[in-house]
Image 1 (cartoon, helix red, strand yellow):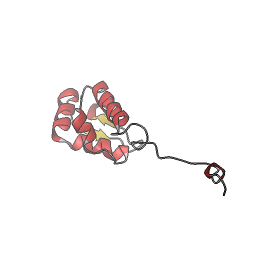
Image 2 (cartoon, one colour; image 1 turned 30 degrees about the horizontal axis):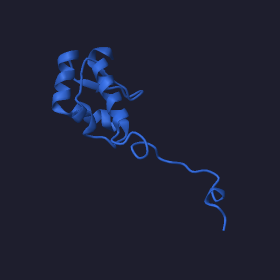
Image 3 (cartoon, rainbow, N blue to C red; image 1 turned 180 degrees about the horizontal axis):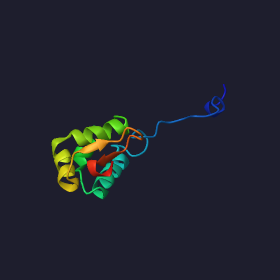
Image 4 (cartoon, rainbow, N blue to C red; image 1 turned 90 degrees about the vertical axis):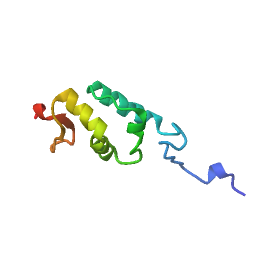
Length: 95
C-alpha cells in the first residue's frame, strides 16, 4: 500500500474561516478599522451581519444599514456614493 503522503502532489485549503480565523475575525476587524478611519465607526455586529458576501457587496450592505448610512451622512454631510470607475465609495463632495 502507498503511503498517503505519496498520493498527492499538493493539498490546497480554503483557509478563510475554516482552518484559521474561525469566526471571520480578521475581515470584521478590517471593516471596522476602515469605517472608523472614515469617521463612521461600525460595530462588530454590523460588520459581521453580511459576512460571506463578496466584499464589494458586503460594503454596499453596510452602507444600506440605516444606522451606518446615517452615521456616514452625519460625518460627511451626504449619503455615500459609489464611484463607477473603480467601485470605491466616497461622499458626494469628493466626486
